[in-house]
Length: 534
Image 1 (cartoon, rainbow, N blue to C red):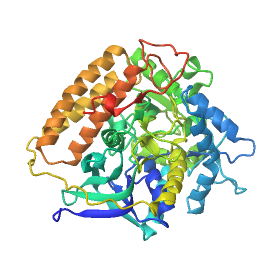
Image 2 (image 1 turned 90 degrees about the horizontal axis):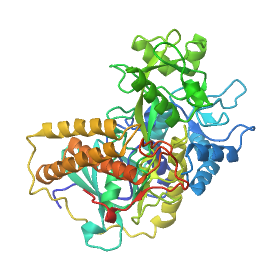
Image 3 (image 1 turned 30 degrees about the vertical axis):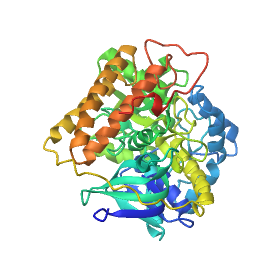
Image 4 (image 1 turned 135 degrees about the vertical axis):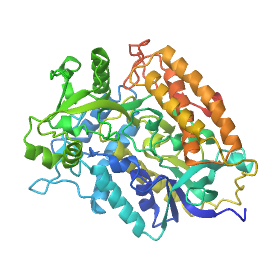
């Protein structure tokens, strides 16, 4: 124990995006907080979010309308209580961001400029041009760095949660985490009264994704291993429009483009969305992504085109400056020509099952944001409800933790990480090969359109990979790539097993063997004791 670095805090927050930093700032006047960031602080999904955050600010809009739109988008699987809770706390959560300095766009009279996006019946999206996430993240980072009770540790990977299992107890409880410090290449322990998973989603499990490299499902996998239930893992949102260009690095083209009049075209220039849905380009994301996938496969096309060139150049530059500049740097002038696009894995609608205070099945363990399943998104997340969920549930979790932090005892001595039986790996190529194999078969077999046979093939391959990775993990020192692969394969198993339990097509889950809806909409919940946890 003496050789190991050991941290102690009131609250350990794993993840440094909107959920993690909002929670840290809400807690910091009442508790000592450590925030872990896997990469630099700007590397999470929050920073790259373009669209905005949904809340009712327009006098012609209503909370009831926001609730109704969310329930419709969720295809019968939203939990009403979670939807009402989120929408009713939306405006105050946004007001908090405004108060700490996030500069949302305003019109000439000082009112907020509100965008409309797919699934929303009113203009209710607050945004900062087309880079809302960057405005939110940079403000949160500035505020967090200023607070004396917040310690931010970058370039660390959480390996596993330290729970009752490590301490020989029976009742599920979390006491901290083992972490890999990538600067020193040493495993360290963090003891905490409370732990919050704010680790984002798992879209890196797919070959094509709009997410940054850090989105490897770490929190979902760690929570599962710790004994938490997960729900609705089969609902993976594929963003319909990722820029298709070898140098674009999965650059996302926000839904707000279609909200402002952009249309989708086949390679011959003809539109196709009116053939698929009455709302055409403003149909829910799952409908748009499936339509693009269908047309690409039907035509044998590498991509489809998104066209806003009929709008004035000044309008495009004012509303979408980042997209305009990015495309221009790749030789595409979007005021003159359409943008080549493909769908890409974008958002994990399911996750660790929580209540309205973000509490999981394990005492003193919370999960907030994309890592969590709150019941808000149902079978399909509606545009701009995701950053909102991060804010609302971080604030709710903070209230719960503040009420308990003074009376909660600090953890006793935690067991040291044992790496006495492991050596340095001389076969990194195995990790790289398995990583590519996993992401390719998940894309081909568990992607936008699924079948029972594809799911069975995927599960067989996952089980083989799990055996190899378990052996590798047991024999070699941990590394960033090994930890991410171990977590991604675990999440892949959860996605496939969840998909196998759903004998219908609903929302984002589309199975050719079960094209119809079942009469009753139920979440798919997996419990660790019932499943092989890998």
